[in-house]
Image 1 (cartoon, rainbow, N blue to C red):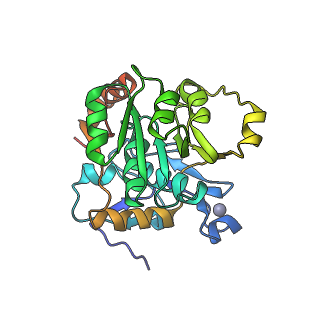
Image 2: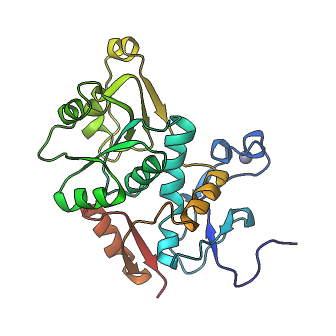
Length: 268
Ligand SMILES: [Zn+2]
């Protein structure tokens, strides 16, 4: 007896877990000791056929094309877990989203705006900043020509932001910490530019800061995201597609960092 029928369109949750441990049974499947992702330690979606547990099949938002639907799960689930579950986003807060052109960055802008927050977004060129604005970012910082920490101070009348959405790592860490308001939270899911980071412990305790790690998200969070996608509240950000046979070119394109949003492979 299965809930998924042959030929049915589905969106796959990227996280695979045991389904039996306490974490899985509590709905915290991304805390399962055996948690992994399609494409990490197990075969993934860079193929014509994918093998995964039935429980990973989620309802398909019919308003989206296949490439658009493929652009949703990993980044929106990750951003949702960071902002809501880990960092407890509150309506109206000031949120600094680093690297607006990244998959998680473009998702975080939309989620924070959905909750009525003021979003300050960073990117490395004006074209990306313009797209961040279209997604709802209220304030923009060009990290190549402006100093993030100083711009945040200016934009918040020296107060700092309630939350920093990090995933860039070494290159932005010092600015990220310095941009936090008193009792601010920094939540991170990555270290794209490096994993070495320092923090002044006097600054950490006297300003009562929180540093939060976050990894992927739960299937329940993805279902929530997909409902908001189906109703048009959240939108996929698709940069471009490549045929599966041009997988190498797609990776080179990603490494060039010129994309805004997701790059999707299509079967030939
Ligand atoms: Zn488990």
